[in-house]
Amino acid sequence: MMRIALQSALILLISLPALAQQPVPTATGRLVAEGAEWELLFTRSAPISGGLTEGPAVAPDGSIYFSDIAFGEDNGMIHRFDPASGMTTVFQEDSGKSNGLIFDSQGRLLACEGSGYGGRRLSRYNVANGERETVAEGYGGKRFNSLNDLCLDDQGRIYVTDPRYIGHEPRELEHRAVYRVDGDGSVIEVTHEVSKPNGIALSPSGRTLYLADHDNGTDNIDPDAEKPTPGDMKIYSFPLGSDGLVSGPRRTLVDFGSESGCDGMTVDSRGRIYLTARSLARPGVMVINPRGKEVAFLPTGPPNQHQAETPVGLPSNVEFGIGAEINVLYVTVDKSLYRIRLKASGYHRQYK
Image (cartoon, rainbow, N blue to C red; front, side, top):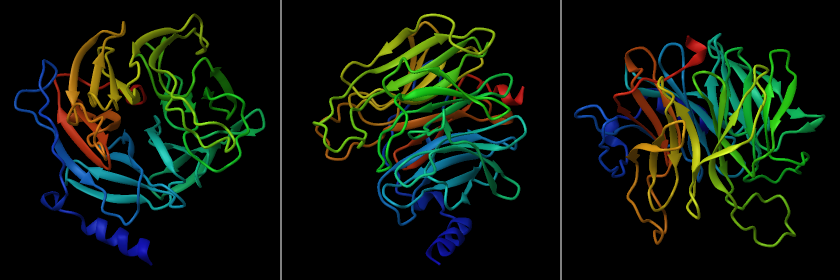
């Protein structure tokens, strides 16, 4: 009954002035449209704790679907933001701990379901009726660790990342890897030359795979292990051959060092990569060119929060709109959804 009441309340919806808005630094620079500012669209009001918003995905009608992930046994939700009305409604009350989302060329919503009481699978929704089906749930007869993020190639094949950050479920796979799910449902390992694969994107040409290594050193996998030590926080690029598999050596484009690195990412029509940097020293959307040079930065939170009890303004994922909003960047930050207009156009191969 609580969830039914909650859904009704969200459909009536939250007026934006009532949202608990947190201060977001002004975004400036050559990529920011004149007069553009961060606009708060949604902040969680559901009676769930912990977690964050994640995985914004633009639908064929221009609406934005995004995950709201909670800690514990609550399985999280998927919301839908309608740019025309400014309203956010609940699309799925039990998302299976969905994280990254994307729409395919047929208008179906693909979701990475994680661990910690989640589905640990790649699922697919018919958004017209809400029906969900399993696309893939493992590799080599073993269940995925905890699917995190995904992207598509020109053939509609699905690249997914499978790290493990939380979860009580026994781990079955040796590696935290990147996989490709083909149209026939077969699953191929693309690479495990990564510590904890997180955000993922393909270049507009489809010949380069971009990957975030976000090793925070925690996974709750081995209760007898000593306190984990954080590992690599880097952005890699991998060349892909005509078969869609890695065809050459890995390159490091960005090394965040001891700072927390990138979570999700996307690309624009000129091939620039938009990285959601969760660094306490400098949280925001870092924009780099294909060689790894920073060309812009859009702060989403105050800098130098190392001493803060609860850091704010940490972005998790990013997505461009389509149509009239092709140059609008949507970003999930903390437990909220924001957008800003840029002098750049998003690239969505599934809509080409």
